Length: 304
Image 1 (cartoon, rainbow, N blue to C red):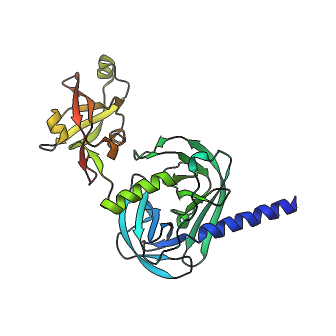
Image 2 (image 1 turned 180 degrees about the vertical axis):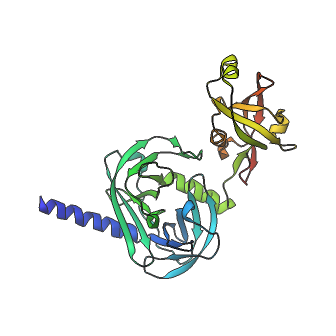
Image 3 (image 1 turned 90 degrees about the vertical axis):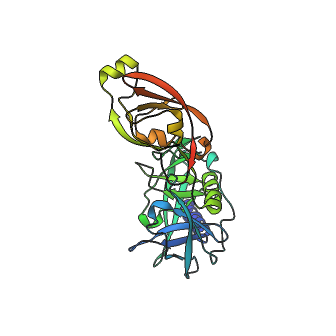
C-alpha cells in the first residue's frame, strides 16, 4: 500500500510540474495575485473577476521573471480575460477533453504565486453535464464542477486531469460548492473573439428594465407561471424594442418562449448567437397578455 501511495504522490507531483510550466501569476490588484495559463504562445487566459484593473498588469513567468502584460479583452459572463505577453512563450501543449471526464475522476488545480511559485490542490470531479448556463447567462458545454477548494491565488489556474492534461481553467465564481472548470472549447471561442474584437458582442433590445412582482389575480387570469417579470422603464429610440412596439410600462413575461422571472433570464437569451434573429416576446399591457416579434440587435456595452 505504501508503494502505491508513493507512486500516486510522485505522479501528482509530476503532473503539477508539467502544468506549472505553463501557469503564471497575474498581478492586477493592490494586494495578492491570481493565476493564469499560457494558452497559446504570447496569450494568457485568466479569471476575469480576479483582474481588478485594465492597465499596469504584470505576470510572474514560470522561470521567475516578471513581465508586463496587456489586456486584450474580458468577458464577465464566462469569467474569462485574455492577456498578451510576448515573453510568455511556453504554452499548453496537450489539452484534455472535458466532455470525457467522469464524476469521481481526480482533478488537480495548479496556480502560481509571485513569492512561493506553483501551488496545487487535489480534488475530484463532482458533476459533468453536457451543457448548463451559469447565473450570468453564459453557456458552458460541458459543465464541469470540481469538489476542490480554490484559494484566491489559484483562481484562473489550470484544471488538470489524471493524465496531466489541461482541460480548462478554474474559477470559484459560478459554483456555490467547490469550483467550476471552464472547458477548453469555451476558452478557445471566447479568446478568439476577444483577440479579434476586444469584447464579446451581446444581443441588445434597447430597454431599461426593473424586476416587478405580478399580482396573483393577474397571474391567474393570464395563466402565468412566474411570480415576477420585468417592467419596461425606458425604450431607446430606434432600438429593436422600439421597432417591436414596446412602450414604457409594458411588463415582459417571456422571451423566445421562455418565462422571465429575473433580469438574468433576459440576459441568457441575448447571447451573441441570438444577434439578428427574430424571436417572440410576450408582454402584459393594460392587464392583457400580448405578443410581438423582436429582432435582437448587436450591442457591445452590456445594454439590455
